[in-house]
Length: 267
Ligand code: SF4
Image (cartoon, rainbow, N blue to C red):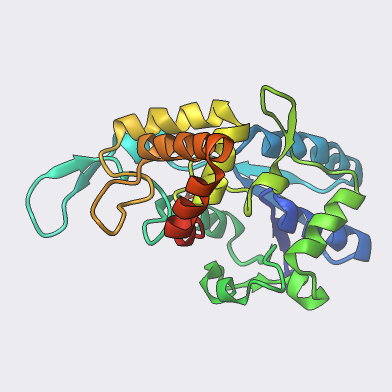
């Protein structure tokens, strides 16, 4: 009988990385590490990957990097896509996120196809049960849940190992996990307004790239306000500038506006 294979799916974010090092430390069976690289990660993710690969090599753990079938930006901006329920095509799937996570579907497809019958270790933390059923791998194992490791534990664990996710913010190094709730693709449509404001403030090089994408996409990145005004990158830039101005010049104005809009910072 063939021995069961075990593959760790690692994104080089805090959760899957904590899972990987803990699997190794506890001696769980591990035949391979697989990473799906869509080319749209923050540079800090690639730097951490390059920091970890020598450890895998030293331990003799094979590492495989998978790619999407077509480039992410082609799918986002150029791929001809048939309209639903009417003739004709539009070009590109648009922003990836929310109910339209076409990039995630491609990742799941690629990892499932590559791993076959192997058991896939998935780095979902114990405090994100809403994601357990959606995780999309039939033969998965969730070690962080077994160990009761929550997201904060994973970050602590990685920090203890000396792993940091540092970005060059122009004005100095920026620790990614201190400005973002979730380190996903830099163009992820799931980023909430607080995260987008932090990108605007601390990582201007990514903000410029977001503006570049928005200039090619008719749909505003964050949809529309209730009154129908668009909530795209350019409108958000105006809003953030206004908020900064208000914070610096007129704190009472800021307070008023913040009350008006605090809710959509969570989305
Ligand atoms: S992190 Fe966001 S942009 Fe990247 S694949 Fe997932 S949903 Fe899409």
